[in-house]
Image 1 (spheres, one colour):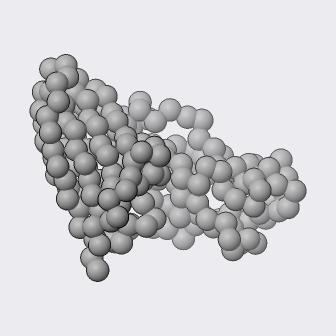
Image 2 (image 1 turned 120 degrees about the horizontal axis):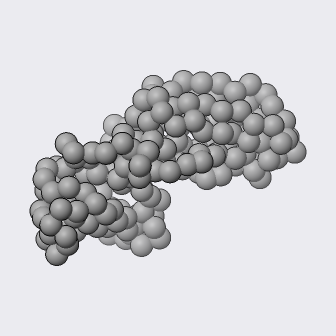
Image 3 (image 1 turned 90 degrees about the horizontal axis):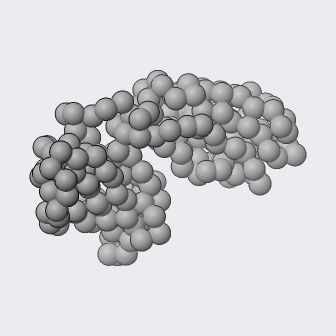
Length: 196
């Protein structure tokens, strides 16, 4: 079945020039969806790096990428240190950034610059069970939902916005769904429900 995104919007008071946006994400079962990446895009966005400060690191530890999902601004350089006793060969075939960090050992590190927005899936050529993601954002208003499926942003200018939700479990092209919204002078609170 095709995924659909529905929303319920309520306006909440906030400062006139700097509104707050509060988003709750629910899965098809109605339960909070933790770990979803929520992004708010506006025609009046500051530099993404202003809201997504570094350093940016995806370590290989316990035969896993840590963190499993990392959000970075466009142009960020991400370090990939190997903290395992075994060697790793990190790669991605994703359109926003194709790269290969050939075999390297414990306490060695390599870096990659992510210069285009989008989701970059990570793998290890030696350990097939390893997977991870770098979400390269062109907006400073990007965050993962907490265990309650909640993400909040400050200082969003009033006006039209696009809300997007990415999660590996979303059944849609690129595992991402988007919808328009409006941030009034008083802010925006919305619940996004991912339906199958």
